[in-house]
Image (cartoon, rainbow, N blue to C red):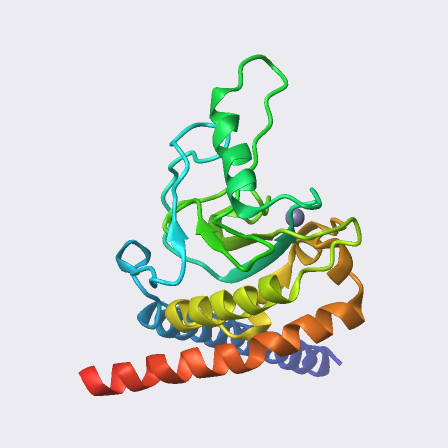
Amino acid sequence: MEKKKKKKNTKEKMAFVLALDLLLLAAVLIAGGMLVFRWYRDKNRPELSLLKAPDWYTQDFLRINPYSRPGTKRKEINSIVVHYVANPGTNAAQNKAYFDNLADQTGENATSASSHYIIGMEGEIVQCIPLDEVAYANYPRNDDTVSIECCHPDSTGEFSEATKASLAKLIGWLCGELNLTERDVIRHYDVVGKNCPKYYVDEANWKDLKQSFKPEIKAARQEKKQQKELTE
Ligand SMILES: [Zn+2]
């Protein structure tokens, strides 16, 4: 009787040790996998400060200030976030001026807001903040996202054809440079559930808009790949 009990105890102990070993092995494999994933991701990550802006958009940076351009540097970009300006009929320059004027605020009820890019209704693109700095648009993901604000003619929030074309072109270029894919293009709504970009919170409208990004992303990524192969 004694012996049997002892045997049983030993068996239980062995099973326990085995389970612990398996658990440890799983933990090591997961940690290793994560390290490899990170290494691979970082290897293909561009140095943000070295990115060269294309000549089809304008760089007109905000003044460095606590409310719209804190000057905080960052190293990685994992998502591109689409917004609508929520101010029908305004153009890119007006929205840029709004962000820039936040610098002159005084008092306690100060507003913080900005965006890396603004696209106007004529399709004009203005970059307000360098890509290696954070903007105040996508809280709590300001650290690792690019923000694009789009102008719109009326309160439905639907973008004009010219805005849509520029948005697709810009998203394509960003995906090529930042090694991102279609899955990394999201809405403000996807970050915090905000009703932005209003017209495209509707899933069918968003799906349609995303369709227009696809060929631009594919072309930009392919071009990047060819460039890389040529230099290797
Ligand atoms: Zn938004």
